[in-house]
Structures are given as structure tokens and as C-alpha cells.
Image 1 (cartoon, helix red, strand yellow):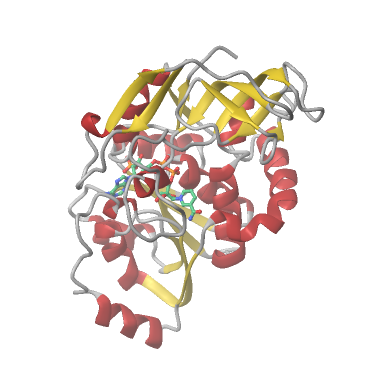
Image 2 (cartoon, protein in one colour):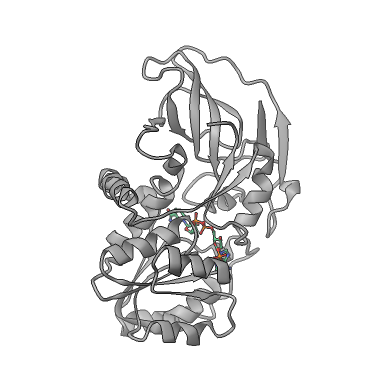
Length: 335
Ligand code: NDP
């Protein structure tokens, strides 16, 4: 077997020196345990947070520990009556080719419903993040305008398409023309803007002539600075991610804080941060609605696959910079 461990903690942008590929012999499963073989490893922006030490909503990966991550895995040996050899399961096996599990936290995946990779994508954690944050906090109404960045990515692509299903206008923000073309032509967003455009604020004004009612915050940084003056009274801002800041070395000076506070007061804005697990009770609703939308072609998804566990560090570093075009996956082993 092979595994990738956190060799050292990054200062700023991660580099390949922060990761180490190791060979190891996967242990035999003990009583009540199963041995898993990884098929798909999901790479997600939150992993950058796990590489840091210090307080957060989740514990850091220890130095020399296996990098954490969601996987789609196959049971290849089982001493657990709940799982049979050949079962496909959603697991948190991390960046490794094999893992032991006592069965807790494993969820069986039915390969007949959808391609199994969707269990870590549109029908998994990122899809659920879009669904819960948009519907529970954003609450888009017919005719309202919803803006989301990372619009071609795992979460953002679903946010805009769900906004359309709910009768709202969807305006995406993405890195570059190819991503923007995909977002409008394939995903059916009403408009999409390039966040590297120096005239982003002016372009946003054109694309949102009636202002912005919901801003689904995935990035922070310059995108937020362009968006927030255009928020309408009573706008809702689900604060989902701040990927523009994950590599910041220190907290930014709060130069915007007072003007944001004034906007929150005078426009009666709602900002609410959330972690997808806050809405675990909605998992059944999510799976029902999202599976139906995917089946009906109302929600489309795109996967960006790199081959082999060895490709994970580079793919992860790319994900933080927009090298991915769609949900970032690593194919660790054959289906
Ligand atoms: P994506 O598939 O969207 O990939 C990340 C994308 O972020 C990149 O492709 C890039 O897209 C964009 N990006 C990177 N840097 C910047 C920047 N400086 N300005 C604008 N865009 C940037 O990832 P996910 O869909 O998995 O995650 C999207 C967001 O949702 C992240 O912030 C993530 O942390 C958050 N999240 C939060 C969860 C929660 O529970 N709160 C759960 C899951 C995700 P582009 O080329 O378009 O710039």
C-alpha cells in the first residue's frame, strides 16, 4: 500500500515538501473490522485548514499523520457482519490506498443510483453544502438575484443551479473564460464574470441591475469587496468558505470592518457562517431532491480527475489556485 502523510506544516501556500509519500503494508482486519481499498479520493479546500495547527472547528492532522479525506472505497476483506466483500462505501479513509475501519461512519453506496464518485461530489458533501447553505440561509425567492463564486466548482456549480430551480437569477463568478462559458452555456447561469477582471465591480453591476439578494460566499478577498456594496436591503449571505484567504500567513487588518458593519446595520443584512454538518438533519431531503435533479438533468456536474495517489499533493495545491475545472477527484484504484 501507499499513503501520503503531512511531512510539515505549510507557511502560506503549501509546497510538495509539506507532503511525503510512504510505502506501507496494510494490516489485516481484526475482529469486527473491514479492510478498504480506495477507489476515489476527494480533494477539498478544507484540507488546507487541517494542515494548520491551532484552534478550529476540527482537529488538525498531526505531523507525520495520514492526510485526511473522504473516499469512495471497496470492502476487500470483512470481519464485520454489516459489510460484505465487494461493498462500495463512503469512508474517511484519507490519502491512502488501503484503510482499516470498524464500520463506524461507513455508509454503503448503491452503484445503481449514480456513478459512485458522486458520493463525494454532487450527491455528497459538496452538493449538500450547496443545498443546505443556499436553502436554509440564502432562502432565494423567485425573481431574486443570487451571486456565487467558484461557480464552476463543486459547491458553486450546484448553488447556481439550485437557485435557478427555485426561480432566482444566478450570476456566477469564476476564473477565466472557459469556466465562465461552461457556467452560462452548460449550467444555465444567467451570467458569469471573471474574478481576475479589474472591472469586476462594474461588470457585476451590469449583471445584477436589481442588486444582489443572496451572496453565497465561497472566496472572500477581492470578490467579496466587489459584491458587498451591491447587496440589497435584507440580503442574505451564507458564509461557506473563504478560499482566497486559506494561505494567508496572518489575519488581515480589519480595514473593511467598520464599513461592513454599517452595511449590515443600514441594509439589515444577514451573514451566517455554517459548516455542512450543522445541517445533518437535512441529509434525507438533500439526497431525495438532488438525486432527482441530477436524474432530470436540472443539476449537472463536472469532475476533474487526476490519476494515482501520487498525484494528490499537486492536485490539491492546484485546487487552491483554481487549476481544477469541476469537482477535484483522485482515481486511486480501478472502479
Ligand atoms: P471548488 O471546486 O470550487 O475549487 C476551489 C475553487 O476556488 C478554485 O477552482 C477556484 O476557482 C476558486 N478560487 C481559488 N482562489 C480564489 C480566489 N482568490 N478568488 C476567487 N476564487 C478562487 O471547491 P469546492 O466547491 O469544494 O469549495 C468551494 C468553497 O466552499 C471553498 O471555500 C470551501 O472551503 C467551501 N466549503 C465549505 C464547506 C462548509 O461546510 N462550510 C463544505 C465544502 C466546501 P476559479 O478558477 O473559478 O477561481
